[in-house]
Image (cartoon, rainbow, N blue to C red; front, side, top):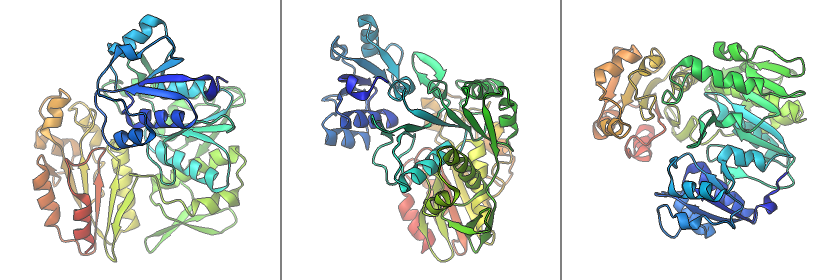
Length: 460
């Protein structure tokens, strides 16, 4: 392995990104001399890089920072192919890594477990990390969200025998158009579900599904591929094709729900109370269980740890709870995530009215060609609300979107559509919140909506 100490000096282009600044901090912690650049750095990256003493002195791109005494350059997805620093690195013949290429390079001697899928991969990764840490196992990791109890999203050490990686299917870098999860070269792979996304990169459902077929077929001899056996799209790409690979299918974990609490049913007829809920989370738990089996975690040890798992940040995350109402927020924005999350909350509290609000914020979700994918995915809530900001459409160079078109795409005539965040806030404030729950779903912020204030009103 090119162990971390063999990298003395590394420069990160687009160091302000969510995963990139975490990589910079992890490398700095391991003793590598880290520099970086970016044209904009926001919180929390700015404060965290400052605390570590590696915040760039000024924003912008500076080719003079790229010198021959660098061991390598790591380029983030936020950079462009014509980035001045990247061009300089190429001109000098320096080794240029994408994020996934570098993670693979730094973990060549480790067993690599890669969690892929359109949905559920952050939660499954979180579950596995929680179980391993609970039982004192040594491991490295790279995950796309900040997890409770972990101060960084990346950890790279010389002595951990395994690394758990959240395998994103998006592009690796501005000069490498391969999906990230193709570059990690997994020993144990997971496909949690396939639901067309990233229409700007994969213009058809077939293009998108093909990336998962490639991932499945990259499973090596003596490797393991763990997959959701009930997902039709997954079934198309996980056909056992190698006698040297172990294929393991899973479904939702057996369970019961009583008084708003979910209990796992074990093979020994024991009931294990858990703090998360919903069929999607029960599938995630099954996936994590299969991975942990491969890592020699016994069943009773797995359940003991799972009982203390509070969930991944921003994944069906509890904001506030009262006696007859709860407020949750979720990162959900893709159609499959929207349907799973809204349905889960309604099933967990069937007697309560559910008001659910989705912000269309990503390129795919705002694209008229993709919108029909949302048909009937928002049927579970009693009151369904969609919000989008027309200025975001302009920024993404997408055509204007009429509220009526959104209503038609979702195929729900009573869908409320807002394009003004204040009007949305007013509508939510006016709702009767007795015996009612609120669910807010977005990869954005509803343009600064004060969710804490709103939650306080709902619960009170």
